[in-house]
Amino acid sequence: MAILVTGSTGTIGSLVVTYLASKGAEVHALARAPEKARFPDGVMPVKGDFLDVDAMRAALAKARTLFLLNAVTPDEVTQALITLNLAREAGIERIVYLSVYRSDKFAEVPHFTGKYTVEQMIEQFDLPATILHPNYFMQNDANLKDAILGHGVYPPPIGKVGLSMVDTRDIAEAAALCLLQREQAAGPLSREAIELVGPEILTGNAVAGIWSKVLNKPVRYGGDDLAAFERQFRAFAPAWMAYDVRLMFGRFHRDGMAATQGEIDRLTRLLGHPLRSYRDFAAETAKQWQTG
Image (tube, rainbow, N blue to C red; front, side, top):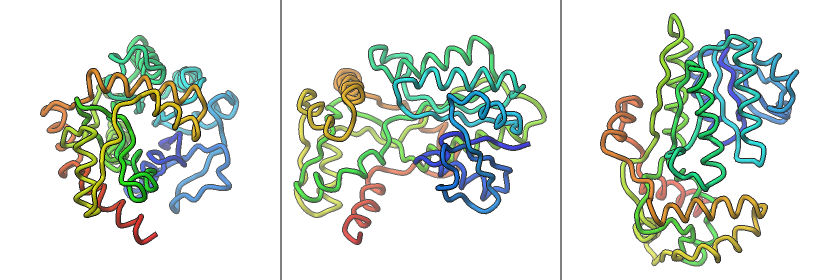
């Protein structure tokens, strides 16, 4: 049977598909428009949408293992719960769910609480699942070329407490390894949760300093003005999303999202290599910006 990968054309999902395919796994990649996607040889595109119950039933009927990744949308919880219920109907007992770091702590942040609600269903029905808790993505900053390179400003108001930002390649590799472990096991494995983090604690000033060194030019932190951030972000995103993200940054200011050494060590053991650093990400990204 196959591993069904949802979110297969996105940043994380596409990397998961590629990694699984490189290991010879049978992969079914769910997408709204698979005819527009480019998947590795051997990957079977599957047309479907979380809210299309018939399409999801058909896709899940041909799978044994499920990677559940759904984007931050107003109906994210509905999408995830429908998919998990359909997976139960299909008898799927091998699941990896991509949640968020400290999903149970940031109660006022809609997309954190939404993902925690999905985790509660997994726990209540004792589904055989690995729940992955990724920290803030380094690659969120890959879209900041104009601000960083053009204006010398690092704008996300991530605060002064600190985040253990994680590279999306480490997230995808961890997800793929967990999927393979469950797919290849003789039977369902126990439920577990794994924190996906980076190797260092990063503040706004620290990140700006890294960009300054990488680019060999001054880059300053834009500061902690959440209202200004929300106004600017609304130029690129709907109002509900800009406010959701503002609430998240507000919690970063108060509590941060710093990993423990135990979490860093556990992920390092799982991956079998050192966690990718923000400096390495920044150097690679700067090179792409300057040559592209």
